[in-house]
Image (tube, rainbow, N blue to C red; front, side, top):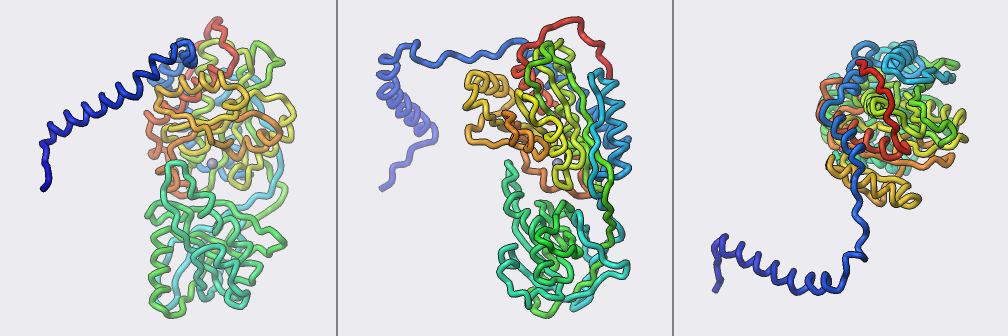
Length: 480
Ligand SMILES: [Zn+2]
């Protein structure tokens, strides 16, 4: 026999059970523990809260930067004329916004540019597939190459294959990346792109195509960098759009040999110029360690790089501007719009070479889109618990949780962190990020202005806490 209670009866019973449990367990503990032994409450400085809430409500600086940069410069491939125009745009913008010490720190690097590209199945079912070359791919002739496809479900399967299975063929590597809030699939499933071309080349492959490292089902291939290492000869290396990779898998499953014609023309030349754009909010104490923040100015060439990473430079610059609006911080805030992140973090390395030995109070980068920040982590948890508690309290009203097990984030600040700078990571929600990352779809319309403002509010609160105190003086005129 089964006793059946009405929903209302069950709710009342549950409440009674919970109340009884609380009285039995919690009440004795409370009576034994005086309030003096509880940790002191952490209250948010009202000035910090006001700055944060103003940014959340009304920031327009970030939108101005991201809209302006993506509209007036557009795509900004590293070490090209377009990236140089972006640097000039940045210098003008940062000066107009009232920042100090605005300048470019140049460096040289090889430049790679894309030419004509296409992929088609020749047999058994002739049809075109959507493809894009990976950065620093080898080039085919304009006539392209034709070869039989050899399938691998992972980069390790390719690694384990005998050379004879690969030689003279076009390698295809599949994978199964899924969306995740923390973007954690990118590390593992990015291996076909990062390592696949070198392994395929060393086994004598004619070329390689991978399933795009992405989580969407649009016919947009995802490009991205790869390097030929270990003396591997550059071979043509491309990414198929996810639906096209799935189409190729279905064709392969029919069991007949599959032949592909692949054209991936590209150019590479040495000694091209890139650079970092640097600006500062001067601190009251020029000797105090600086706060380093920023994002990367370059983008891939397939789109305007709104989420990767015009939004990052916009968010961090806007936050610094909000501090400047409030007065003068004790510490200098240094904003860096890093050049040439996409080809391998060259701007970050150049910055660390020039400035890595200077004392830094913190290093932080925004380079994961423009969706809301959902959690943060920092080395300060161990080195400065009271400040970590302040940050936790100030960020909580924005829906941001602390992550006691997090890591330093951001390719560009990595070398500076490796040189000893403490770090903080404000992690954005990456659920949608790999739908658009490195595709023709990385455009301004993907940015939600409300979530962008939440980012600015979080960075503003972080800067306000770490700046060492802001002395309100004659405020700067608000300039757009
Ligand atoms: Zn990026």
